[in-house]
Length: 172
Image 1 (cartoon, rainbow, N blue to C red):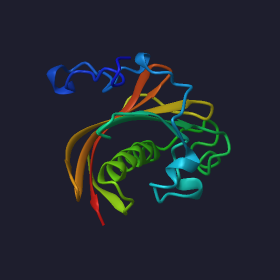
Image 2: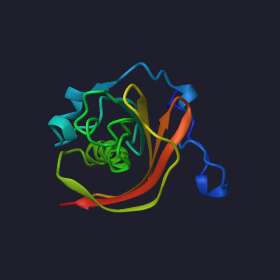
Image 3: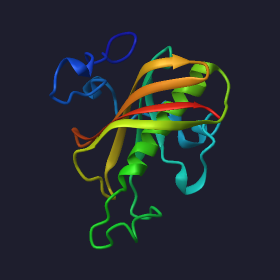
Image 4: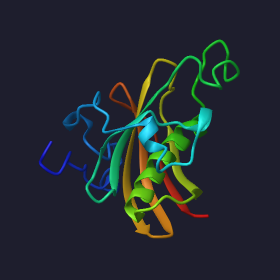
């Protein structure tokens, strides 16, 4: 890790091989700089829909970040989403990523607000996420204005890319 944080990976459009948006090997993934409780200052999500357990790193300008979701065996979806082999629903993976994006967006704006995602593009699910996994969310901003954002987000479990998406959102 350099003085300003981890190295950003090159633009992923340069190659077809999936690359991480941020090099996770440059971070201490066990160290949270913000907890779930800290996130409540910015994110409006509460109860079972609050997906993030902490933020591990964010850039100084809040245009990139890494967070973690500890996937528990008591999640509300475990009993019904393939009971014989509980799989985290893909839309909840995207939601977790969108919550990291929201935190970065609100922080960059300097004030909490309500923003929602209006579009998801280029979403690919590459591997299952199951109870017991630590889902690391990686976000890199593509475009920002005080009322709208576009960000790329990825999910990583055990060093493997499990999903990726481009999320667009706006202040509601």
